[in-house]
Length: 313
Picture 1 (cartoon, rainbow, N blue to C red):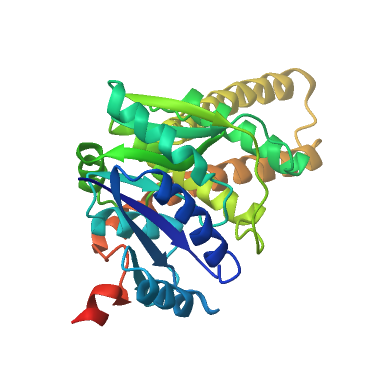
Picture 2 (picture 1 turned 45 degrees about the vertical axis):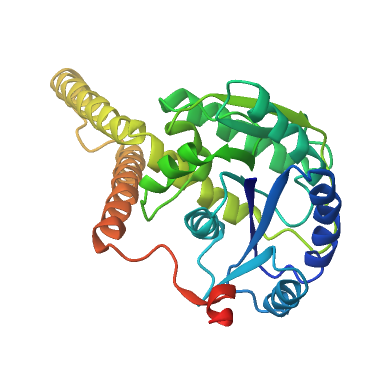
């Protein structure tokens, strides 16, 4: 019998876990042609999420869990789940039900009947999302698709069902700084996209603030494009040319009209402008250098504190 592993990253989701399990019970009952395992990944939760996962494991052996030693982030949780998944097909799904479990049977049928390696989902619209957040998200996708050779679909979710071959390819990309939306696209394979309408969280509050989303977007930009480095170089060349022209203008003006000490306020402004541009370009280089530094340290992407397998030994 075909086995499907569903990877569910969780961080402080005690209110949503049981609701999610009840919904997945309906899906698993519907899909009797497949064997399921629900792999919950506790990303260092500070609430009772882990305790609930343990109760679910005791109640239903199809439920497994991994628990991190601290909060490593959703990207690490996805990677850990994929690495420990045992299924022939592997899905990634949020626990808050914003990724509708009811789509899973359709996704599985597509992979069974059509020549696709991966069924991914995206939001049909951004209803229910603050306008500023929607604007920033749309701007990010437009920007990264212009500067990157890897196309990232606007509104793409992490929710997808993959064949084992694609999962193995994703796991080969064991980089420390991870941006899964880009990784899923970079490895290639044939993808079928499904759209669905916005669904509100079943319980709890989102863990993604604007600040976290901004930092996550930087991971995507620096991970899948070197265009900002080229931009820094171009800006440097332009300012060198501009400075040379300005020097010629000042020499000619002084030779013709004199008055060499006039205009010092504008000179101060120019110095501040050029200094700001230099710091901006240095910051771009610093972002890439910091990523290189972290990669060369070869630190583990996650550290397990305990798992359901250890509890059974």
